[in-house]
Image (tube, rainbow, N blue to C red; front, side):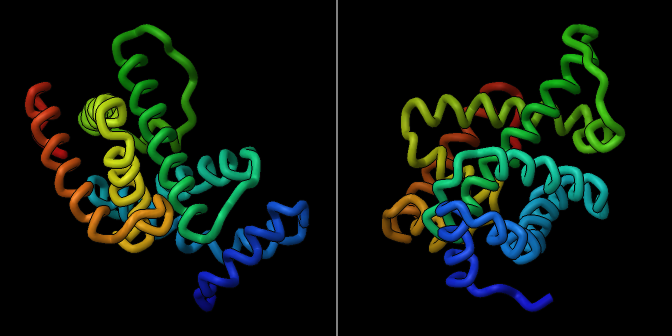
Length: 193
């Protein structure tokens, strides 16, 4: 499938915002490959070759995105929200997995969920989420930069567009946030930021 232009995706997002249900039908095939690339990029860092998990993550993110009020500004904004949804999905699964392992808060998990996050990966994701929440309380924009860049795979330029700041500001925030997270995670015995 040919890659859709940023303008085409933005136009369909605006049409969907304005209540055109046909726009969603045209939009999803255009963004599906990009969502797959983002999910695969994130999951692939830690679990290469697991396309089933990528598919499960994309489908869950899609359901959350479609269920949200539609206020998309443009393509970059849509993918930033998708990154946030993927973060929450992965952290929710990680927490469920850790709770089930401890025997409290058990719930039935699908096969896709069960293999999506390993026990080691679950601990890392929960620690990262807690550190990101601490960072958000101190420096909200830096936390959003991490979310867009790490979870969403957005470039510095795309992140700058979403957050309405310069690319230089994003680069500074990215460096500072990574250093802060590295320190925070090493305090908790996890040094993988």
